[in-house]
Image 1: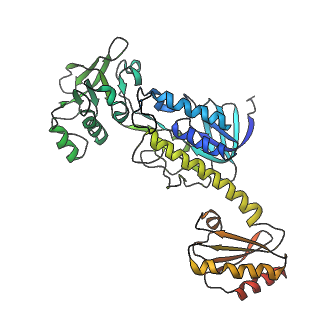
Image 2: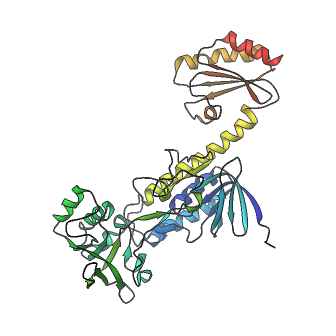
Length: 413
């Protein structure tokens, strides 16, 4: 008989403990929301494997990635974030209660933040696992280029990322040797990048090759390439190797619920909102241009803030805006629109006229459209009359004090 899972309730559950997830958790916990962060592997994410980070603002001494992410974790703990080091098995994200299940637990949340990141696609060549990350194989030129100053490096791949990152490496490295699986002169990148790379004196190309194995005592020192036509093995001496053959977002368990790109990245708007209300995504798991610790932190800040606003607006909507005790007037306006703002004086008169018989709420969409979106109001100003917790009448843009008074009198009778 299967063991019954333990049920725990939280305001916010963050899936993923990289820089984005940690930042989102810090923001939501700081807003006094009960926050849980679930990470299946290593808190800090892929950034913890980076030997030096030179481009994260405020850290001029180029610390290790784990130095930065450890500080983030320490701050999250201080804010009251709870941690579970386990794998998420399934999610149910539709509806008011979001369910996140692990092997032993079922977590119910008001909001979920998806920060599950991704993983670099690897060659699966012999011995590769022995040199990943800090032992000779890297996946981020922007992160590790400076550490390769004056060194010889190998780049695997010929797509836009591989060639552009390879050219960036030439600003630091002595030589960049690129393994390309196609015939001479054929690459997967755009033509402009290809021509620039072919003319770069620091770049060399080994055509018709894939990686056969990685070699070295403790640290990578040789990449053995295999010619696809002749099967000749070509050992390339190097100090480090960079693999740019793709990135796999960790979105498998979300694919039937969350809108994804063809590559599997989560689609969001600038508020990190997904297609499901109350579900946000941040960091490398979302479709974005630049994947760095700095951008992950920015994403996480927005997602954590947005989750807090969603929960606050949701609770306000249910308990205040759509209250059932009395007929209500919801006046939705934009503070920067003069006529819309001026009608507030009429709203004040209406409230005084009914002497406590109605509940009046004023909603300024300039600050947030969360409440108006819930009411499906797209044009402003709008006056919504409610009765018994439901919409009774809607008046959009063209209305007067008299028409609103008449509507409220009808709702009272």
